[in-house]
Length: 184
Ligand SMILES: [Fe+2]
Image 1 (cartoon, rainbow, N blue to C red):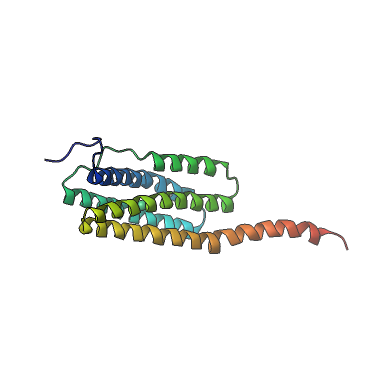
Image 2 (image 1 turned 90 degrees about the vertical axis):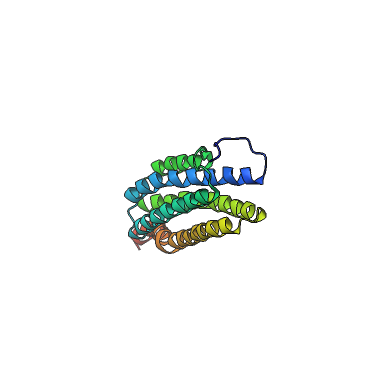
């Protein structure tokens, strides 16, 4: 029989379950968020990244469900307030961006904050699984951690090579313009 959720935490196994449920809820929250972001971004590369990351997130949800299945436990019962807060922050930040280039840079920052939160969560869950000698679970979670790391590197690359140079360039042009307009 499967365990009830939202139970008190007595041992490392309970803590592992709590962490997994938190990650599960966090991934699900991101599905809605990523879909909305894909519609907000004006940059081809960022939109491509977002649709790829959406597929990846769906795969990560399946992987967590597989873990719960192996453990014969229920995946629900936790609400990830961390991801909820980060998404709320991202929305507030995006609403204040009135320039497309800056908006894309802000969206990248927002997803990176979420990714870093997730990397901490997956890293912790892997450590717990290893301590409990559940290397089968650790291996599955490691696949997701690797994906999150790759996504983070992809975002950094995007920020440095696709988004920021344009923003820097526009800022530079604005600085240069008054000089070039000056009568000699
Ligand atoms: Fe994820």
